Image 1: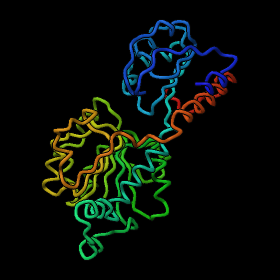
Image 2: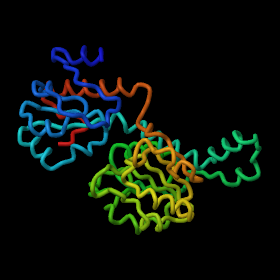
Image 3: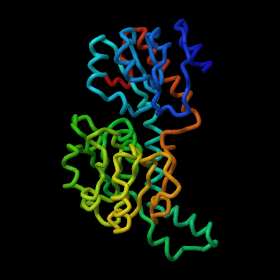
Image 4: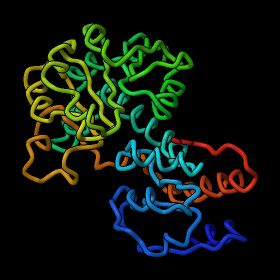
Length: 307
């Protein structure tokens, strides 16, 4: 907070009511009516209604609550700008996914389970199961800053990558197809990475139909949003073997209830929505905002612009 207040000078920083989670919905704040810039998770209705708001920077990469035609139209009508913090979270999320992939390929959970349970030396069973990422096939479902950074991190492993997004642009770092073509590619894939945002179109996207098209034993990873996965379908796919291993950082709901079967399903490994986290996360959020503030004051294009 000290860095924010100091770095924003000569602008005045007014602190609204804080929430513990920067993804949490917030109610309208009366102080926002006096602000030119909002940094955080402002009420979408206020973003639409307040003509004085010239720029809103979200403290998250996701922007589901703001992904509304009326909000984008209102922002555009007053020549304002909406940005997110994708460049703050692409690196940790990409590294988290790489850690997942290395864990499954090198049998890390099985080795640690043997250690915790009864100090078993599982050489004969586990050594033949370990794999190299080299030459394996991976499908990225959803393409943005996280997918782009993951592709860069995977370059030394010489994997065969393919990506899917709503509208390919031609500047992607891997062959990219419309998301409607996904089913035609799944039979030959060893790893499927879900980086889809939460929208009406992606709700329950990974369902029985999608999972049944997986190559048996395929590994599935989700660092997008929990709502993009039909969780009963995932449980059934893990049981049938169409999904050999699931590594998920997001669930629906969150926190995942203690009685939920995903906790105890074999070959399902859960991290508690920490994929985007790191020790200097909030410092980086402030640095990202201040860098954009300097651009804003200079009339230059802002980083991570959504509108």
